[in-house]
Image (cartoon, rainbow, N blue to C red):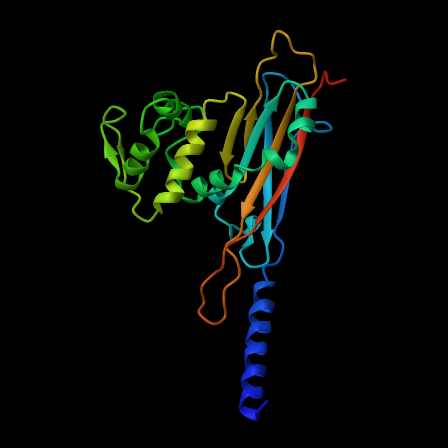
Length: 246
């Protein structure tokens, strides 16, 4: 190998090593979910206050308002029988959370909530109207990107030209598939309260809530161009059991 080829080879190896080393610098983010109550239990038809703390080496800390609250998500799923969790698996329950995190980053929850009307209709209302409508996914994707007026009374939805069509399509499909589920809800922000359901008539006392707090960081900055890479998610899951749980 000539000296010039050898030097080129060394340079390529050094660049490759530097790129790999830089890629690995996305330090783990820490998400801490805390709920008020005794031993992670809940009462029927009551309020469970919660707080979420996030710390990330690159993005900062929620304690110092360095992380936007709308990028912190809590997903709550109620199961009438705790054995269902074992059958489904906690990992599988988390599959769709990335889509909801993207919805929170896109500020969808500024105007819409899971089940209650906010500025605009709830996602549950949207799912009820469009779930079985032909071409609903494409129709709603265009409305979100281009904006609309008059669909829900005189409310105006602003356009979102900065969102990618495929990303919006995934959000719409998630909404139509999951928002009608009365046992699934989600909240944006670092603190809030979960309203538990009334005790079902046939409740065995084994009801549980699976709460998952999530945050996806913005990734480290590439020193060569200042751009950030795709972020990584941190999360914590808690299982709340009914006080009647045996």
